[in-house]
Image (tube, rainbow, N blue to C red; front, top):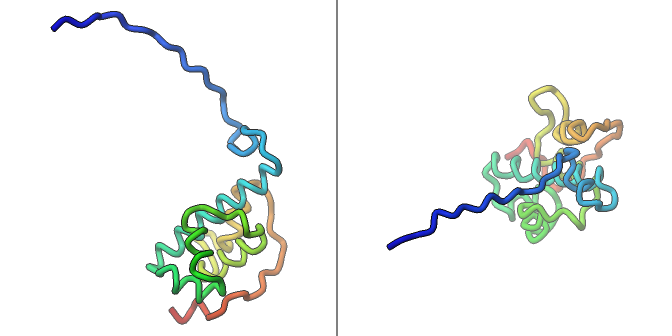
Length: 129
């Protein structure tokens, strides 16, 4: 069997990213979308690290299991940034490696600052797990 050794050199056109895929795609409010994405990822990691089932996480967070499922699939569209920060606070049990709350860490990665008081929205104390 004989194959042609003709190779085609295709050039792939690429552009350097700004670091925010939402801005690169021209979506509205790209900083907010990036923050929501990072908060959702942080919530996912915290729920997994604690070994919580979605129903258990829902009880702790005061949300229904289908909403936890949406978060676990990176579907944060129905949640505000503030609510995602509260959820991160509840499931994160407070502070990260550098003493900041998990919400502050996510916000800092976007280049902002958190100077808001986080109320306790948790339906059950996360310290009793």
